[in-house]
Image (tube, rainbow, N blue to C red; front, side):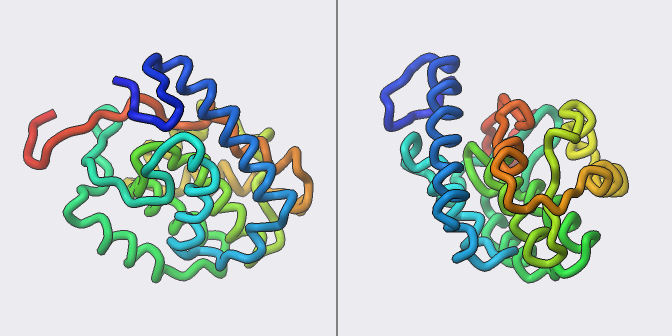
Length: 202
C-alpha cells in the first residue's frame, strides 16, 4: 500500500523515486547551510528536525512520532503505546564514546520513531554524534550494504557486529559532502514495513 503523501502519488515506485529525490535535495541543504551545527547531537529534537527537513515535502507526518505499530519481517519495532517513554530513555543514554554512540543508535533503530524515513534520518543523526564527540563520521561508501542491513537486523540481540562493521569505516573527513551524502542512499534502508494492531498475531 502506498503511503498517503503530499505529492498525490498512488504508485509505490513513483513515490519512492520522488521521495529519494526530494530528501536528497533537502539533505544537501542541511549540509550546505550548516543547519546540523545548530542542533544538539544525540537528542530526539535533533533527529525529529532532521526527519522533518528531509521529508517535509513528501509527508504530513515528517518529524512526528508514528501512530502505527510497524514490523519488518518477524521483528516488531517499539509499540506505539510505549514509544514516547522508550524514546525518552534512549535520549538519556550517554554518547561520548564510540560504543555508547553505536548503542544509542541501535536502540533508536529498534524504536523506529517515524512511519517512514528512519534509516536516512538516523544515519545523519549518528554521524552528528560521532562528529561532535569523536571528530569522525562513517564513510558509508566503505560499508557493504548487505552486511550493514544484516548487522542492523541482529543488533537488538547482539551489537558487536555493527560496532565492528562501522568502526572499520570511520573517517575524519567530516566536512566532505560526498561522504555525508552516501549515508542518504535509500538502498541502505529497510523496506516494506508491515502495520499491525496491538495484540495481532504476525
